[in-house]
Length: 166
Image 1 (cartoon, rainbow, N blue to C red):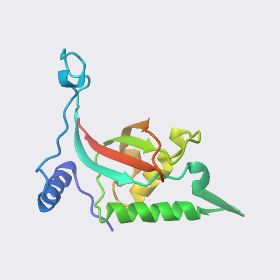
Image 2: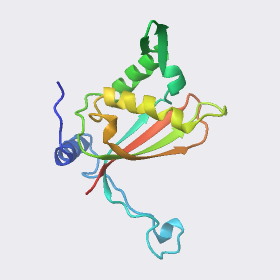
Image 3: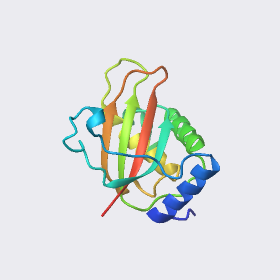
């Protein structure tokens, strides 16, 4: 069974990992200001969360193709869903699930120019991240934002996870 960590323990482990990889002790996250084009009046937004992690993942399967009904009330993951789940677990590696409230930002880089509903990939993405022990349960996500990005060959999904404060 996985051990659950609180936010402070996750941040301590994260700092140790970054030090081992030769990265700065803390991730740099700052509000947009004058140099970003808003005239310097005040920040465009206020960040009241802490960065927990950023994951560069393959483009998720749509929820429409994630499950397969085999009849007689039997529903299983599709082959594509199992392959995606395995790929996510390999990319994320050994993780200890966070138990705190979360905010997630998703940048979706579609593999082609076909029309796609952005909301059809979130459930499969969150399911795979939960299975990879990024968080204990997707009910911990209080807020998420999805942004469609330019087409990238093969597709891509960048997930940034923040700890909700207060």
